[in-house]
Image (cartoon, rainbow, N blue to C red; front, side, top):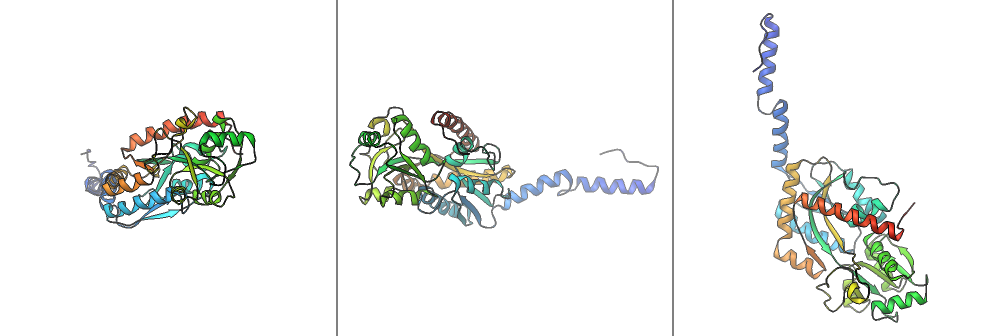
Length: 340
């Protein structure tokens, strides 16, 4: 306790009051910490908004709805998907970065918004490594190379030969400039030494539909959107972009197996929150998301849709983001991927 002044009874009285207030629970510096803890203890006490930087029909949409349904059960509050497609995932990611950091706005942080866009756009509305805090990695998914069934190709090598014979005549659809699908397709054309016209769409769903309708001839995009069309015979699958084959299509080879050794382009996503979100709330979100992802029924749904659940700690997810951020930087330079 500080020494109490004694020359003036009024000063002495005021000082005693201040000392009592400072020491009382719930006030002063101690009070700030207690209040923050109380906020985390009550969290969540109302619905949570889950921003999806993508549109309906995309694999991200499918996985987000499976995840948020399970998180709602775990947390005892509804987690509501808010789809915000556009700008290769930047639009939704920017909304999340600028949201109030109270735990009631969380987002799907993914490859396009956090690791591709910063190396493609000269001006970014957010800092991918600073303005969003990692909660956990949720899943790593396959990219699938598909073509319209009337295209006279049955293998990836056939497609490469056709593209070489018709430079800039066939159309590659993507979910948008700087999207994961754009990067997967660009990496494919760069490694294969071919050229194709690129038509970006606002989301994976419309881009895949454009190939189904033969408006575009091929796409290399996250597996969720083309999967039902391949099963129905409306699209032909030629390869997957990851290191191992996809569970839904065990007979479809990897791009490395099909003729492009070393090809790798997989999608990933996780849960992120705005910078400034209290650590105690991040810890609660991490625990709830990890529990949801470890549920056997969710695992099965993810795997059958072409994604592997891989929950972990916020620190692990931060390292994962930085590693892919650096990897994409090198790819973007080699491929000349830049937007003014």
